[in-house]
Every structure is written in C-alpha cells, then in structure tokens.
Image (cartoon, helix red, strand yellow):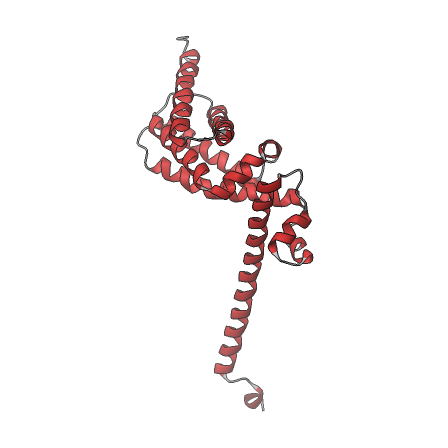
Length: 223
C-alpha cells in the first residue's frame, strides 16, 4: 500500500522544480518592485525635492498599489536612506578599483578622487537627485552602507601606514577629511553650469595631499 501511495520520483522532482520556480519568480517580483520604487523615488526627489515629495508622489510614479509600497518601505525617509545606501554600494567598487590600480598612496588619492567625481557626473539620475537635495543629504548620510564605505577607506589608509607607504597619522581623521572634501566639492561641482570632474579631482587631491604634508610635518616636530 505504501508503494502505491508514495509519489513517483519524477513527480516529486517535478513538484520540487515547480516550487523552486515559484519561489524564484516571487523573489524576482519583490526585487523588481523594490527597484521600481527606488527609481520612482529618485525621479521624484530629483524633480520636486525631498521636502516637497510625498509617498503618494512616489507611488503614483511606480504604477504599483499603495499597499505594495508599504511592503518595502515605511516612509519617504526610509526610501531616501535606501537611495543613499544604493549609491554607496555602487561607488565602493569604483573606489576599490582605483585602489587596486594604485602603487603609491598619492596615486591612490588621485585615482580615487578621479573615479569618484567622474562617477558622480556619469550617474545622471543620482546626480540630479543629489543636486536637488543637498540639504537632505547632510542629515541622512549616516546609513549602514555609507558607514561601511567610510570604514573601507579608513582601512586603506591604515594599510598604507602599516606598509610604510605613508608616515604614521590618524587614519580615521584623514579618511573623514578625504570623504568630507569629496562630498562638499561634489555638491559645489554639481551646482556649476559646466561641472568638470578632472578639475575637481585635481584640486581635491592637491589640497588633501598638501594638507597631509602639513599634518605629518607638525606631528614629527618639523612645523
């Protein structure tokens, strides 16, 4: 009797495959919905600004039901922070590649700024959203991926100190200065009629490295 009731192995395999396919489709749908919300929010924030934007504006642009939005995000604040995380996730490989291409500490700084400012200008939607919401960026930049990106940059500085590529200094404060300079200059660069990534990266690298020499001289008693 048990042999009769037991499913044929091929039937079990088919059922398992169907279940896996359903699960895969569900996950793809979830990912697609979340991406649609983020894309819509990026457009809305870029068009009307964070302060004037509403959840309804974002939902209307997605074409999804309002209930679907709240399955992924609780508020426009949460969406904005997700966009910051999304941007950080995309810029980190760019900085990592600049790191891998550099043989000296100075070269890393120059390559990193070059990569960052060109990336800012190449991502048109993110560029427009950031340009319209510079005030909101100042209070919503402390997100998990943004912090992880900062920690990664600090670790690069620490590695170069340990290897002797750069004299001992406060790696955390140097990373903060490097990142802060990049963010502030990117904001100003985006406000210009003809933003120039090469000009911005050259200025930032020269300014930071000249400041680094001053910090090292003072810490060694030369200043």
